[in-house]
Length: 407
Image (cartoon, rainbow, N blue to C red; front, side):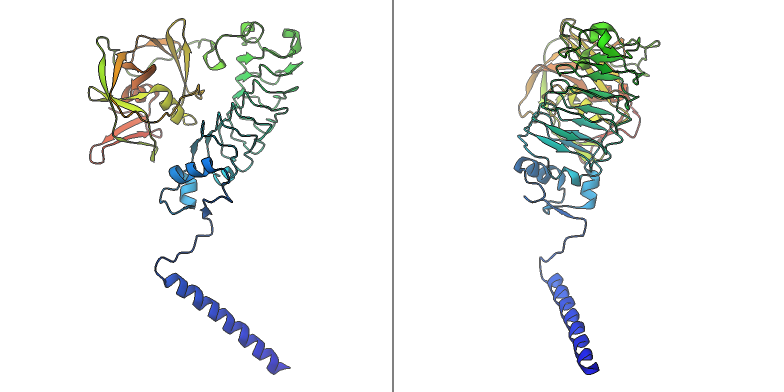
């Protein structure tokens, strides 16, 4: 009996040694490799939607090995997925370091973000969502889920939420009692018969037309900082992001003088060929060089800075031809952000719009190119105090939100 046991043990040991030898031989073969335990294969199983999978391959697989390493996952802080014909974001759960998600104007029906616990900003508006899970997003500060098909919305675990835009859904009730930091709420065009904002002492902007609310009596706990013309009929002509905000008691002004606005004839705008790094990550901008200076679309800069300490909001008043910039507020996309790079020279006209920063009129060197406003990058960096640098050797523009602006 003992002899038989010894023979069995020898066979097991020999089998294990043989298996180990095979693995060693395989590793020694030319081109052979073994995935690290944490690597995620970029395949149809993990990322079933072809458009989402293509984005991951092109933008996030930096070493182009067909897999996501721990380092590549850690670098994925912002996903720019708007207008990409995506029907499913299965696979987004792998991006555990994700801070900002843009996935507006797709064909999403469900969105499970329960694994993305570091999210601070979510823009999933204009999809076909019937459900969204943000229950584990404890750091969330802004949720834009308007123009979907949601019948319920649970934000009870999002205590840090400051801005909620859930208009144009099918909500019959909305509980914001756990969102004590909420400053802006747009729940218009739903089916709400009552609304309780008594637990939202910081609320200053409320839009809720197009519900079954018959008047202020159907809104409980409205504080005196919310002006009535923002939430009752008639429907406002401007979106929430451009609604008037309470004027600060002591409006802030730029810490340094800003270069005066230019005037005069049209200028030649040449597509910027330089590489642009934002916090160490290459970002592709539609930018132009005018008279030796780089000019970036204002809304593109606001987009990539969202979620950082240097974020800012942009409002537009067409009747007054005025641009309103509000520091330290998340940017609200309007569509067209981060468009593809221009490839041809264009005519740049000096911007005629009046520009306000935190309610104070200021001047910028700015041009209008094909209907969009482009600002000198160093002016924007100086105003919102983020680092702007230039590496001549690599022909690279460097934007760093962890640093202050220096000349």
